[in-house]
Length: 408
Image (cartoon, rainbow, N blue to C red; front, side, top):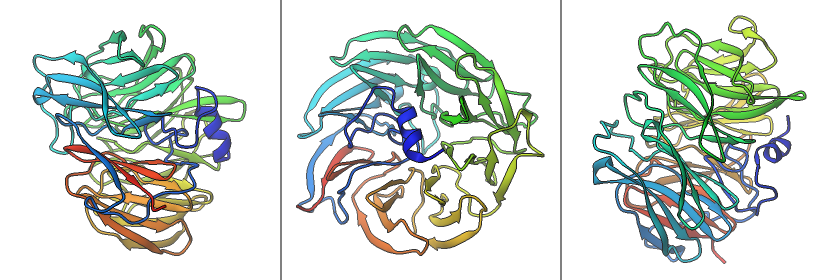
């Protein structure tokens, strides 16, 4: 399926402005933006900084944007108070700060995680926020909490994967050390619509943090969800498992899959990630029949892959970027761009933006040959994925959100 068609399939709120970025990894869920102008060079003291807004607490959710508003989440009081925060896109002025959940014992999180890591979803005048086992909620645009739902499980390292809004359902993966399920809530009421256990997991570590992806296969739709030991494809209406593909030993899966050319591309997680291209037209266990190709070295633990036409771009957690032929897995180039990486890259205006964990963003040309266009630095930790706007970029650090404008 071509990328523009998939973007139309996933955009559930009708036509959106080019800069709207309403869910994790943008309108198509795969890291693509239609904006035509973006900043290329900047620093956090340069003239391109339109505004900096301090964000109380800690959260690694990406901001989501619709029109002139943006939302993100954060956790204060060491994770005991979970908030949804709304800012004015032009000025960075805080408009709303809603405490959604109050927790007595939020539990521990990994040093690279937070209690507010899942990215919200904007849909019309509703905001959907998700905090993993801490709860899920729907807010109106004016900050009123419309419903809450809490389905506990043990995430081991805290909440991670973001939800996906698919038709009348809000679907997310809930893979803990105790139970492993894919869950669908009614988007209007928060009621549980279905809850489907993963196929039997033979591995000792069963938790994962991936975000589901909706794809179209012929006339049918599938929800792809990467868990520990296997990826599963579900009927979005019922949750019924259509097929699954095993990757023994994989767990703590973080990257969101991408889809194209009849293939889903995903990484198997820790300890030694393997990158897979899997055909999506199978039934049942397709492990031995539908793996088109695999990559055993320099696969990402954390950053999601990026598919641009026939080329697949990945960066591993150690800063090694690779460009592959999506259909065959043939390597076009591989370069060390530096830094440690957790954020997912995005593609816009013919460029690819890679952000490391220490405020450094490397910009390259989307091409069969490696060409670095710029490298920019801001102060702070940067594990949240950046967001492109028309003529600007939103970049979240551990203490603030920045809007960086392109040169006029």
